[in-house]
Length: 284
View 1 (cartoon, rainbow, N blue to C red):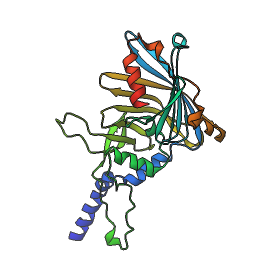
View 2 (cartoon, one colour; view 1 turned 180 degrees about the horizontal axis):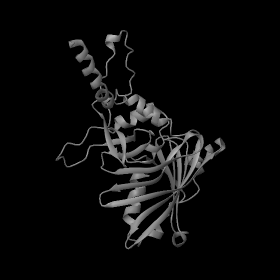
View 3 (cartoon, rainbow, N blue to C red; view 1 turned 90 degrees about the horizontal axis):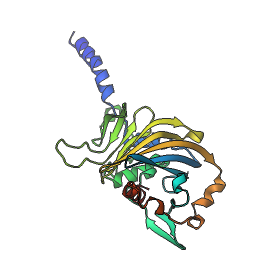
View 4 (cartoon, rainbow, N blue to C red; view 1 turned 180 degrees about the vertical axis):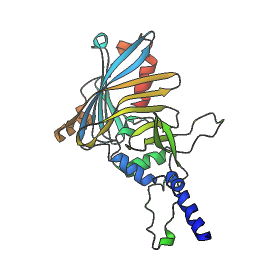
């Protein structure tokens, strides 16, 4: 009788144990990287800034090969057609631009956000998250295979937990912020079912949320809506289009391909000026 009750009790505990199980970091990052597509993509999106009682709309055209190799051209609407343009090439850990007749190369900002949607290597993904203190440097290491049944055991990782954001369950990577702490701890939220990035918070306290994911060519999952918040600023990003490009477009990732000067004169007297400059200085 005693054995029977022990068996019943064990069976009753199974749902609790199953619900508490969280995939290891290595698996989460591998699955998320698989949803970043392959090859080169052209991505067009509209970026909206509060501009007094109005909204300033800018158009971004990205050419993306990976989290480290990209090209960005930003233009304004009719009112800014000839007085606003930004062009960057991201390659070799540097952001290249042109001012006047001179090419300029700066180190890519630690707050650069676009890479979080484009990690195609789980190893590089893990290294970046470790840099931001979201996970330990050893989080991606393979665990030794158990030799006997007795060695098989579930060892939860203290830096991964379940958390809801965007109305769906997520794997939250990063130490939860203690109640009463002034600054929020950095972290990344990856949707449990789709394995896509739903939220990122960096040590600088900038936050990006991503919603309404769709699948595109070559296995790319990309959000149709994003919001970036820092300080008192909120910027909304709306996806316009995504298309795969041939490998011949790779020559556009060369710094020598930059053909447009940085021109911000059109926003000089606009209320959105400071937010636009900070956004493209820090997060792009």
